Image (cartoon, rainbow, N blue to C red; front, side, top):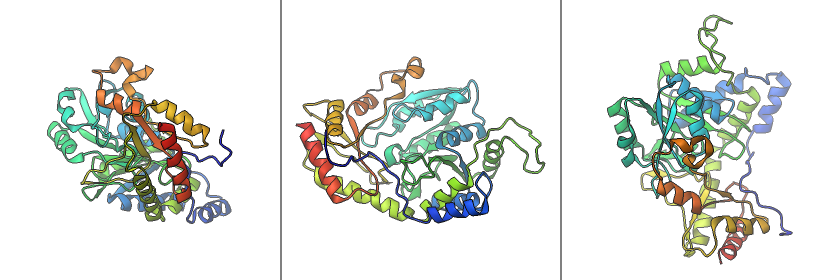
Length: 369
């Protein structure tokens, strides 16, 4: 076991006015789901995504569920979801009583392959859920074209892609709505938190209605629908606003780390490094490498790195391989399986310095031998 300090795979960067804003919440006693920071955070986040509305939630999963509920997704419906993603993407479809229909990924970006969409659309299909995996945006134009032609909603799962851009346009401002996570390991964090973004006034009104137990905004304690308690606290929003005010610094740190890994690993023959399409601005929520021709398996490499005090994480298990969803596998999904078996997320967070990157890369190269 290494005697050196452990390098975690992720860590928050609290470099702004977070503590000041939280102290204001404590001093004013506005600590629950009312207070000035909620509206301020929503307004600033809507501006970041170039949309009219942002609706804050208590975590990214509830934000995704809220988006689907507000779009009217329900029993008997189908939503096309990448198999290579975090399980919340499919679980929230299931919460609605609908069925996630899995699609394979593109090898370069790890995101859903638009070329496979048409074959999966049925009379029951209601929506497509592209996921901007690990911070690289999905190829949205063909997705939006197909969705428009079939009358389908597009829900961007941008949980890992705060600040990413597709052809100059912000992630979360491309589909009918976008959904973000502010978990502690994300590019900006509120500890736990989420956001739904949209340009649709009516959809925004439904999001706010269902988020707050379904209470009529014009008639207090009158509930016309069954809603949810998915509200963000003022304290969480205070942290989020402090984070968002320094968004360019957070994004610059990710670019610096990615460029540092690129320089150090460019001659590593047993690794495939992250690719960025010409139309994309990658924000590197995680710096993800693929083993190719290595003498050891991905899991063996992870174990050796752990022994050196370096935490890593595997690429997500494809959803169709997990027990709740195995029965819904339509085919083998070979590209997702290959990436999942070979994919490794290296430590990616703002506090990493050059010495840390040197140590990580040296240990990685030794682990691959």
